[in-house]
Length: 268
Ligand SMILES: O=C(O)CCC(=O)C(=O)O
Image: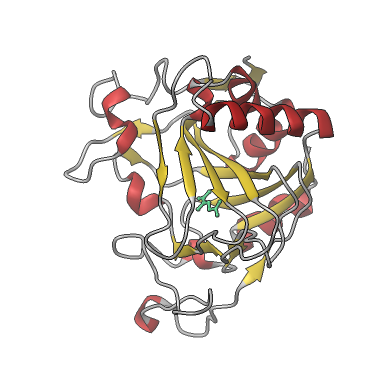
């Protein structure tokens, strides 16, 4: 559980380091499952697997790894993480929009361009999702830890969601008109040991440096939605939209969007 001051900090800053959530055994189990998926030996296939490094190196992205590997399905319902997410979203029903593994391989890991998540998720409303990003190896500035811009979740939607990154480093580039008067764009790196969680709001500006070290940087982010999240289709499409079985305007439920907490009861 989080303290009231941690919840208050998340609400004002748009992100929070939640501390250690996985045991070393749980972390290892996820790493082993990832190794199987990358070798094509998982029981099922994920929604997608590819390189999103964008010509600046490699970032292996796997979407809905939980559909491929039971250990990742179990991870969605991790009691510590789900309890914290419910507090942060102030809800007693939590569902999963999708998960996302991102691996920055040693020496060639590309930076993650500064962005907001929600503009890519227009097909669901409202913009109240919270992501739980868990490092599966120690994450530092050198190997590409998640980094946040405090308070940016209160600055509205950045058109298109992609903010920008300066060539040669990982400082954000941005349109100053998108930053409210009196605000500053400050970068806060979230260095965490393996098995620890960093939460961010779906409108928080975030990015991650490149990885030129000899240590890989695997991580799993689960994008959680409060129970009242609805399907509201627009022209903007999303990879997992084809899995939606409810009608426009209805609550986003269904087999591909697991309910992990219902009326305060944890679901496996
Ligand atoms: O793992 C990363 O470097 C980026 C992850 C991310 O952008 C997210 O979880 O929203």
